[in-house]
Image 1 (cartoon, rainbow, N blue to C red):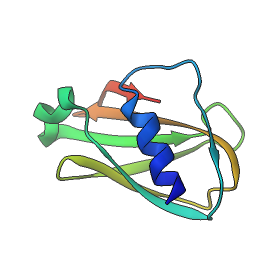
Image 2: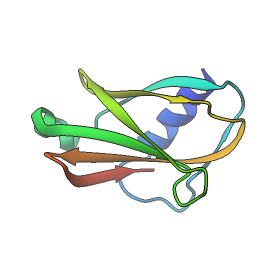
Image 3: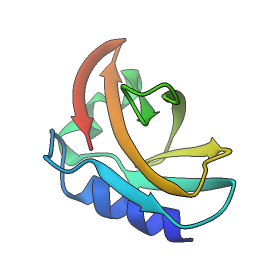
Image 4: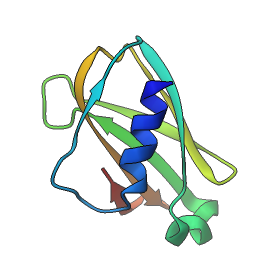
Length: 102
């Protein structure tokens, strides 16, 4: 749905920090999403894990672990309220942070 498109658009900007990290969510109380693993991380797949931080740095911040399925990260953000949110995907290889995407 809407969240999937917004999430993919944010992710396709690439790994790294961007100036504008806010996104408007227009509905739903939970939504599933999936996004491709960055090309530079595909070789690290055996030890690769990921998580998304929703609204980091706020009182409502939440961290959700993501699943690695084929060439994608997948997850569900439960009880996501309507409004502006920030998302940061963190990628780890053997527990060490190696990349972020916002």
